[in-house]
Image (cartoon, rainbow, N blue to C red; front, top):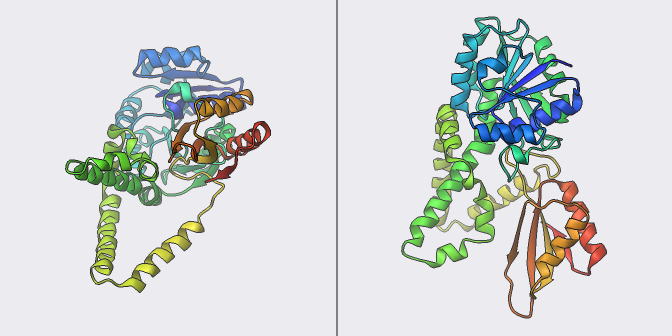
Length: 367
């Protein structure tokens, strides 16, 4: 594969795809476009792209592969723009959005012009954002869902898979409707629930100021996805509204059932409810990436004295092990606290545990 690739939108996903394609197909030429000129310049300076394009038209006209790495609302507009252009005869267009049914319907404007479009959704991310956070290993072992329209044949799907081979992702081909149901259940709904929990705590904090202090630790962890981009999630929810309306009605029924158990003090039913949830949750895969980026946490028992954090992070720096997050739980004077270090990959966590053991006698556990 030695053609020209045009990536529209140079954030974490777009930048990481550029790196993956270049690694696997070094003869290819990667051209980038971004609405932010500063971001475009940064992508060029970091070597994420080979060339910069000042307009979509300029970059698209000679491209063999066009990747739309933009918010879903913008993707619709760009598809309309591309449908009115003179593109290469065998150009292949794909996107990376979190909703697929609406985008697939919009792709009709391309298909009617004999332009091949295949929907895509790499289920990978990071706790960092922007092109500077791009990594060639971002998609490794992550699920990458492809949703080709009915009019697109398998030959085109295989062609796209060749372009994306360097991601080392696990590719699945499903329908747009199935994608939106799955994404709604395991990604979109959790974001809604996380945001609602934060709103509830915020309302309570108006009368009880301790809530803010006590909401650290576990509460902060289970609601971390509420820190995601508001504009992105606004668009995703509108795009996937039919699925989410049904899921939220089911959720309300589920909460009504739990409310009834509590109101009637049905101890056995409450026990069974949590036991079933525990069994299902404990059976989920532990060593693979899902729709929501995971924390790979390492818990370190540390004494409470000045410099202990820099000491441990210094060990990790010597071994070039990157940290995505760090915090201390329940430190008290003259007793051990818990240092929680988060990593982007399981491999980094394993290396960190071995590193800390080799430099110190601090106990570590995996969470």
